[in-house]
Every structure is written in C-alpha cells, then in structure tokens.
Image (cartoon, rainbow, N blue to C red; front, side, top):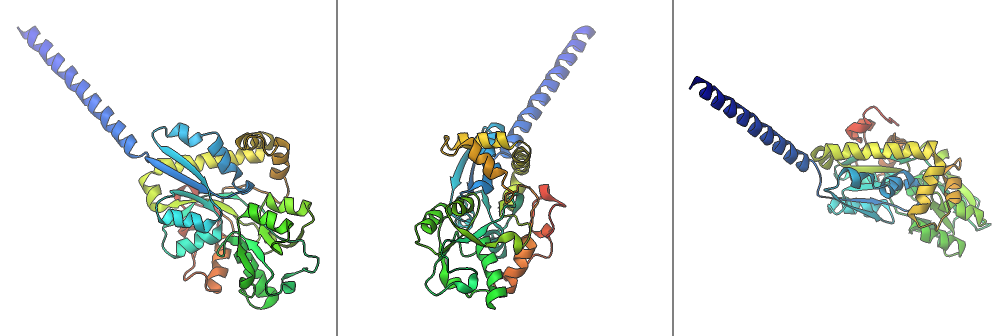
Length: 331
C-alpha cells in the first residue's frame, strides 16, 4: 500500500513538473510573439548612400530573423515624405539626412537615430559656364535639390550666409526635385544647378558638370543618410531595433571590406541594370564613405537653430540617439 502511495506521489510530481514546463514554454512563446512587430515599413531614398541598408533588404536579413513580421520596403523622393509617413504611422523605419530628421525632432515626432549609413560628399553642380559661385545666380535661375529642409538646403544656406550675407538669399531659386529627375533636368538644361548625392553627382560630372560646392568643406564629415525610428517603437520592440542595428553594422562592414561582394549584391538587386563593376567603382570612390556613427548632427542643428529652422537645438548627441549607439558620434 505504501509503495502504491509513493508511486502516486511520484506520478503527481512528474505531472506537475510537466505542466509547469508547458506553462513556462507557452508563456515564453507568447512573450516572444509580443516582441515581434506585425508589420514594418522601411522607407529610404534613391542613391548608393543607402547601399548598406539595401544589402539588408536584398539579403532578406530581417525577413529571415522575424518570419512572423510583414516587411514592406519603399523608395521615396525625400526625407520630408519619409517624415510625414512616420508621423502618420504608415512608415515605422525611415532613412534620410539630418535636416529632415532634426526638423521632425524639433516638432516632436519622437524619433531618434538608430544608425548612420553614409558620410559621402554631396555636390552642387552646374553646366552653366557663367556660374562660378553662388554670387552668379540670378533671379529665375533654378537650383534643384530633394527638399527645402534637407541637408543640401542647409549647406546651401550656410554658404549663402557666408558668401551673400543672407542664408535665405537663394531660397526663391530652389526647386524641389528627386535626385534621378534632377540629373536629367540638369543635363537637359531645365535647371541651372543641382545639389545631389552619389552616384548622380558622378554621372553629372562625367557629362560635363562642374562642382561649385562640396559638403565636406562646410560641415566636414556628415551623415548624409541615417536610419531613424521612434523611441516608442524601439522601446516596444527592442529586439527588432537591436537586430536592425546589427544588420546595418554587418552590411556596412561588408561594403567597406568586401566592395566586390557588395557591388554584386546591389547589381543583382536591380537586375543588372547597373553592372557590378560600375557599383564597385561608385562604392570605392574617394567621395563615398560608410559608417554607423552619426556625424555633424549637432553642427547642422546649431546652424538650423541660428537661422530659425529649429526652435530648439540638442545639447548633446545623447538626446538624438537610441541605445545601440550609446557613446557613438558627438558632433
């Protein structure tokens, strides 16, 4: 009889242990599911400034790590459109320059920097032989750039402040135009100058364009493209945020250390419309550089605040970055 009771006790304990295990396993599974976003839209702009992010897209790194999440990738013409999408919650992750980001930060969008992508120079280019500097632009002459609060517009205003005594002296000359269309418009004479980024600036110079301004001469090393998401979204899905940061860091390392492989992936992504050899030439151009630490955000913010584009300015980079970037950047 005693043996039977002992047997019953052991069965009870084993059953209890099994139920506890199943409960914990189910709870763990539910917790994991709750940490995975149902849908993520990632928006970026044209050009090789986004090469490392595009490698993440092409290799489907996020899709493989988060199979329960529906990912959508969108190419938009400028940072303002991406900012509007973030505000409307139609876009969860955006990639653009410091200008659009800082305006959104100032207005309370609540987004922060997850990672920088690129430090490439961007150039103001003209084919008009009569234009040597900003002093040569007359009323009616058109300067194409992607947005009025983008980093190109900020650099242009900085130079206008120095050379013309007024940062907004050429605002009436500005024409918002996407980079690819701006390239064609410059080559066909529809605009007088184009403030653009790689590879469009390289193509314009190859077609006889002349460089008037280089961004590196104004703000130094500048994060022309970075990845942003709201702090609320990051806090809700920290594992996703960390995974995206790691994927970008790995892709950045690939671009810097294995440009042949990066060029192959990018060429495959656009079905060979641009050859692997051409992509490698662009990626290794001395005007192109990739890195995940944010640069020149504080410099841009200080100038934007000075001329009234921002109501406030960050005192340190810590106000602008998400946890994976802790201790990175600073200017």
